[in-house]
Length: 425
Image 1 (tube, rainbow, N blue to C red):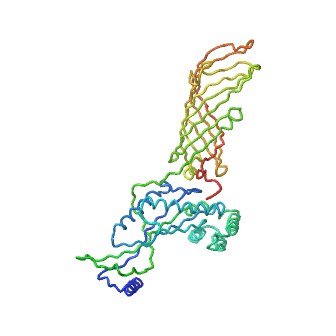
Image 2 (cartoon, rainbow, N blue to C red; image 1 turned 180 degrees about the vertical axis):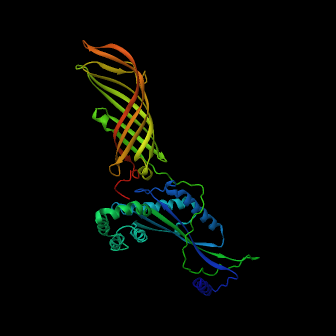
Image 3 (cartoon, one colour; image 1 turned 90 degrees about the vertical axis):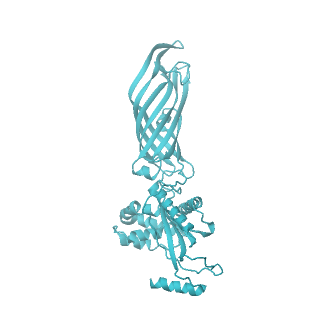
């Protein structure tokens, strides 16, 4: 308190202005937002980012409407967690800072001249603070390693890599695994602080002209304002996540196929698949022909799915339509109408599926899926005789049971589309 009074007196002496019954105050509006592992996209639904950002923007608009407030500058402090290479983490940190600046441009009227940002890359200082405040095992030994890190390592990735290697091998990696679970998610974040000064003056019959005097240079005293209520979420751009995939079981059976799946938010996705195989050898009466497609809707669930889209456990429903002609020198089976199109009495399937998508690296996953349901449709049995296919019978298929099996190779499409395993963090 004595310091603030002294600071106020010094400010008056330097400006030569006496503010009758007035006070000079300093404040900071702060918000902390979080990013998914390996992502630079700012998601409003992730860890309640949207609510905090809307609260932050509302506080800013309220202060901006007050004519007694003078904004000093806005500081954006961004970092990443240690996993991944140093160069990729620096680029990821820069992209996250740009995302924050884009949000501020779209939701506030702050000029660029007031914006400053500090992109750390790996936030080692933040990790030191979290370790120091914890009661984790081998705490002192971990801090000893972290204290060997200089505050500025932007030109020496070798120091960071050596530090990470020591942390990973210390006591069999137990401290590193603990930090990965409890501390690293907190490091994938950005702090946004708006520093401002404001004067509360008494109501006067006429304004006091003080425009001819330079504003005092006063050191701001930051203070965080925590959100205590919820507000409507103003959503930034949602992350685009789409995959291309092929069922390797079909590939092994010489049935070329391709599929795609699009993440639509909140763990939901829509997908479609197409297969086409039209192999034949008339002289040997070998026919291996099938074509058709599938539509499906999936819901990804579990801990992994909340961190990265299109990974982890999933449940879904699907529908298939197909026609086929199989013969290997003996009795043949043909679906639909002979010589017809896909829709001419094709076979149909509807069912429920369960699966798990396992990340292999940043861009590749293996998806294991089993489905069961109901398949129906007309098919024909025939025998090859004297160079001709002789019809034997026409039947109606009514099948309850397994109707789908996948071991699919999945590729994440796009620069920012990934499953979160390995690579940049």
